[in-house]
Length: 249
Image 1 (cartoon, rainbow, N blue to C red):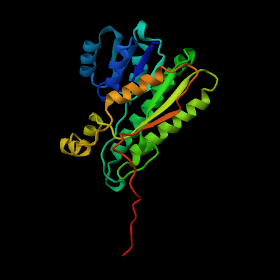
Image 2: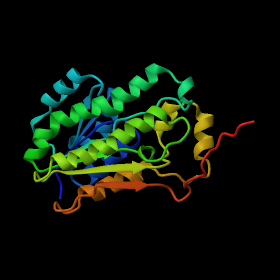
Image 3: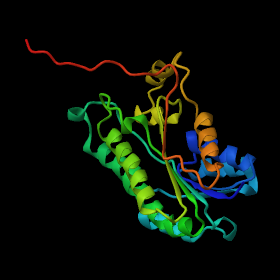
Image 4: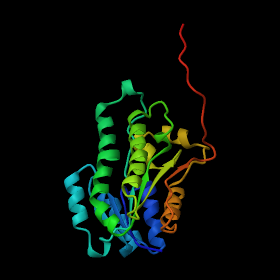
């Protein structure tokens, strides 16, 4: 089984690993992202099976234009992987920047629903698939998660709503909810703080981008009568702590 998939956020981490795995297995991949230089490098590595498309997913007009101008060989999208997303900062709500909250909402929610809406007619026509990369933060809050966790909870519920609305149309929808993953994501979140990055992942044996890529590939290659509604994934090293309690006096 092969086809064409569009992966948002293909310039690093999960998206880049997915592009490599799918093209290695005979798929065509449309890879999107803001950093044209990185997309060009990936195109050089993966060859004609990879179509780089540079735009900012927060820009609706640019998103529309990019999809309208896809090469003919890449227009029949079978799978949309909504991977682009970010977290900004680890501070508690009173100490965060409103601009960071808005950027997370514009990227993780507004941009995602825009590209999903634009591709839905094609996905319905081809009885395709939508894979949304959410997070365990959709279900499990933690200090400093605030708006990021809220955006991922939206994505999980949006996935379930799509499943309901697309009933009978043959379109599959999955929400993947990873835990601790080692990728550039955390460097973005901490403003490039390598010391914090090393402290977080040191000895943790965290999920790697290739692990998520292989998970998405498994989902994509299931028989068309099966739908994986949601899949929560954590490294063995990660589990739950106790409740926090503020005491008087």
